[in-house]
Amino acid sequence: MPRSALQRVFWFPNPVNEHAARITAGLVVLLALLTLLTSWGWGLAILAAGFVLRVLFGPRISPFALLSVKVLAPLVGEAKLVPGPPKRFAQGIGAVISLAATISYFSGVPLLAWSLLVLLIIAASLESFLGFCLGCTIFGFLQRLGVIPASVCEACNQIGVPASSLPSQ
Image 1: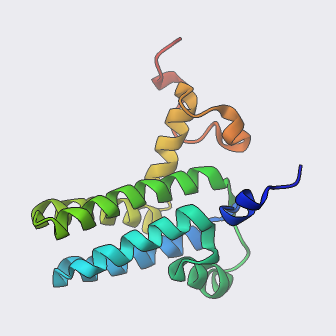
Image 2 (image 1 turned 180 degrees about the horizontal axis):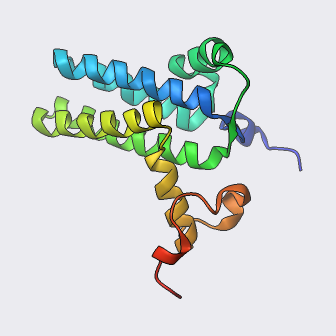
């Protein structure tokens, strides 16, 4: 079925190269640490803009994603493909957290902003250094609970949480 013009604009790849996702997360960690160490509020806005661009347009516009996909990931080797919808969901969580941090900072609540940034650094570090995508795990959990329909990602409805840990229905 052909995609509509709107679907083409807001397209996100499926599958995704895990190497590129991990490299992008590493770049997020670097900018987030620099932002935290310098208390540079505009760093929060740059992080938020990057997450929003990746959620809306995939890797086509985000500078970090373009660098990862086009330059750095090919240096790592052959692509390791993983489902795209959980990665987009994870980017959405990053967008919400970084937008909340940005708003908090510029609203005069820097402690909340820096606390949110630390959470973002932890999640991005898990992805980059250990290959553990917290957002993907949450996606899998929500899919198993039926909050996210299986049709959203047939290939990934087994991500994250073992069935034995879920309540019976």
